[in-house]
Image (cartoon, rainbow, N blue to C red; front, side, top):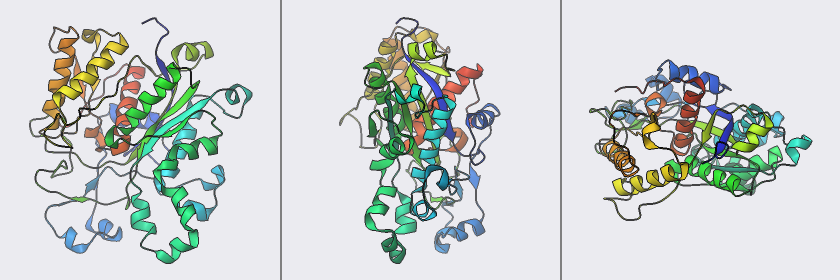
Length: 388
């Protein structure tokens, strides 16, 4: 691969637990660098105010923890031309993603309405979690729901419209694609954006994901054998790993072909040298279980596409969900792929997971890890992975 091949990350917008409302990548980096765990622990009064059933609160298995996103209930509606009524009917995921899409372009110093930006085909690839705001806030209030109008509610809440709304509101004329692959959504969106850039279909791309569940401040009922942690901590790769905790957040990256970014004098956070997507079909013990072979294959393909020697890789930001089944399988798959690519050494590559900082952000989990890694490269500092 030549020096100017690859995809440059030229803009970052991040909203994750532990950050102040409206915070940016610098706020996220400070928390990561300082090893801060940003899991909120709720009081009984807070949970009762959020509408949690008192019988559930009394259950000793109820875990009063979540990677809550401060400011997810806020939105600068006039800035985007929405009325207060429209904003009220709009899923917070749609609101926060739209703000982050704008912030990613701002961070990349791109104004789509300027002649230099207007001539570029800027695409959007993104996905969101299920609209629990619609389920828990709007549907129970039929009178209010009918006053908004069925089509309006659908347009403001259905995740099919996440990417196209950003393209419409920000005047972006490239492809606009909703991506839904559960917790791999945002990384699949980034892969698809890279392919569009490499194929010349787009000149710039926004890619990422958002996951914000309603109510914003609530816990969960622990069940033995589930993927959820019994104490609200995610201990990725630790011997005592017992699951993850839900995290809310949104991440968007602005991407360009590396040669274009260099020619334009852009600030470059990091470079994506290769990526790959696959599926392991039925070759695993269950629908939600991972497999060594499927993961090893996709890692091997990404390594091959990148042209990077595996022994030169110093860090892998892993899925790292902190489950006793998933973590060993992931390490086995990484080892198999690196060995197949010719790596012979041991102990040369660190692994970690941002989930230890603020939980599993579902559709936004992958982009959270990518942003962490890009910031680590920018600052030439490897932040700690917690609870190991």
